[in-house]
Length: 91
Image (cartoon, rainbow, N blue to C red; front, side, top):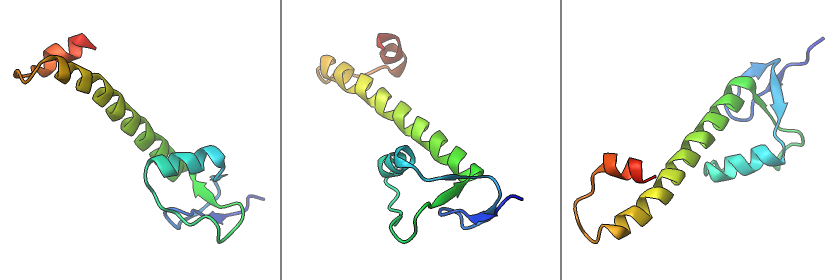
């Protein structure tokens, strides 16, 4: 028999859940989600919330990678107008 648990993020009951482990905690910190996980042991998130936080993490990582590419390129332009298409090719 599957046990239902309450998702720490959306508060919905779910049979499909994962325990919030160290990696998930680190992802929540990177996403700047201030979740108090000290109230209960073995906090869980539902499959939908798990998928969402990993998708958000991938998106944030992509944005940070783009910024890492863009900043050095902008510095080489010395105040000149920047063409985003040209910058993409520079990457």
